[in-house]
Length: 387
Ligand SMILES: *Cc1c(COP(=O)(O)O)cnc(C)c1O
Image (cartoon, rainbow, N blue to C red; front, side):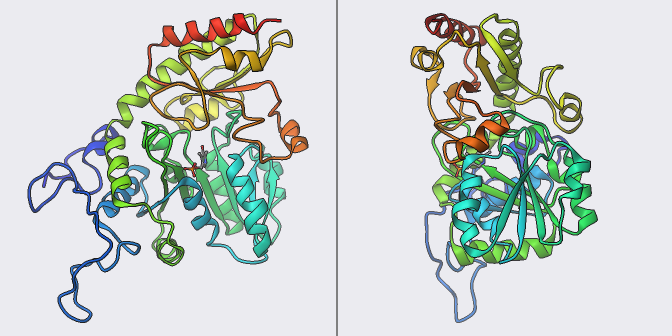
């Protein structure tokens, strides 16, 4: 099949991993919808035995995400949470994981309600202040897990700073790269050990598949994660693997439009009299703007904002027309969400308020529609919500 004659990620999105089908010349990897494989004799097979352990369509996706993130091995799971669960299963009783102060609600929940029962604990720290963080690494801490931009306040953490701290203490650094994808940010290049994705979001990109991915760039770590993936079994099916490969081919053009729209809307919100605060890492006034500029291509396509006190956020949500009120993000269609009651509802109120996830916070996943249509929808919803 075609050689790897390219240098840039736009081409890797389309030709990376395993390109096409060598047997037929098909330009797409077939959907190998099979659970098992006929063996030629005892202990003799063509490299495939059982689809929990390995499946060619899933393997093509796994090779693709490993190449895009610059890692040695990729792993595909049935959801982002299954990917995170497999990664957290690398640890054991007595180990502690530091998480950044506004991680995805489900990540907090699986640590707080599941892994704590097995003696793997967590603590929530501000990962934006590296010196203070460094002092929090006691001997039981075995990993730092961060999101940057973090969910939902789009806080920026210095990836190289985190990787350096982790290396100095001999612990693992883990980044949930869902909000950026390898098209905008490649944490492994900054020295991060493990990258995790909810591929349900931008990588799939069409709100039609739930999937998770993990990438490592260390063979020993890869062997351990492969063992966990096979032993616990939360793998992604062949059809969903195909959907993700298909989605990733257009990731570049989609994200160019997503982020162009997001910057336009963020600048518009910033100037809008009804708006109290805008969180968007692509604005020069944002926390961590310079760090984000250094480690990512741009500010991404997630925006959070708060309306002033004389606007009713509940009315705002119910007045939206083009933009749908829904969980999730990263699809071609724009979505609005209320973090306090939706994505972050599993975080206790006092922790939520402490980290700034107020009841009035609105999170926007900016889609690839016409930006002026989106702005018009936001403006009419703001008008309808004025008290
Ligand atoms: C959605 C999401 C997850 C969980 O992924 P699922 O595919 O829904 O299981 C994890 N991290 C982030 C940042 C997310 O947005």
